[in-house]
Image (cartoon, rainbow, N blue to C red; front, side, top):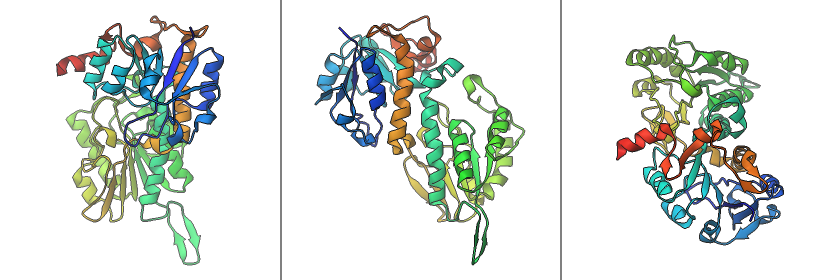
Length: 377
């Protein structure tokens, strides 16, 4: 019997992405996989059921999950979804284990193997599987557009009959994938861009995109390409230098996020108080609480009727076509090497599978997730 892959319609509020894109589905079918899609699963990403050739369409999630060997999802499964799945199934998607201990526990009870996309190791061989990066690129692009939309000034320099309009000053804090895309997009829009990251190794990348790099004297390279946590003295030094640059910026875009942990607080209320009237903060780290201490996740507020602070959630979902396309390819690149003659054979000696696994064999496999979950018991 061929491997039965199921793709449900996402049920999280506001989620427009789907874990399967038509061309990826066609590639899997050619590999001998039986792909089943829930009716209307791709509509919010502008993919109709007819776009999925040779894919079986079923009406309900219950029918979909009943016999599925492998499930592709975007958002973590709910308890109801898990209960509908057969014991021993394999599920791949974002799992947010730090936020959903009850979900992780239920997967262990049902002997479900879960591969968490946020745990995919950041090694060269896994770049094509890195969903955090593919979705962060969209967030950075959209963040720059949000800043331009909310700003009270033009981004580019304009020469008009009424005189010359000077370009906007944009500051991007955090030079990971999202930050670099925000820099590139803001530059394309004509802004003068400054950038900052605690990882000094990003200086060359920022400058290659046309941004001026701010050196605060704080260097905090950490493991896995992320920054380590700053000491109290380093935070103070960082904020003292950044405050002056934030004060003169028209738009500040913050992107400093750590998967599974609260976002570092970089912009204080005092810094916002110093910002000029009409300035904007776009906090792309709002999912983790925000880089600005005034950010209200999911809301746009106006501090003292002067400074707009925008805390968008699930930004990649706002560009659902390309977000779904890239995400589906990430899933395909992760799983396809382990599909042999239409069957799934996960190699537990492979570093990518080892590190991506959240649960397997009735236990939590990820060391990163096991300790926090045990502490919550």
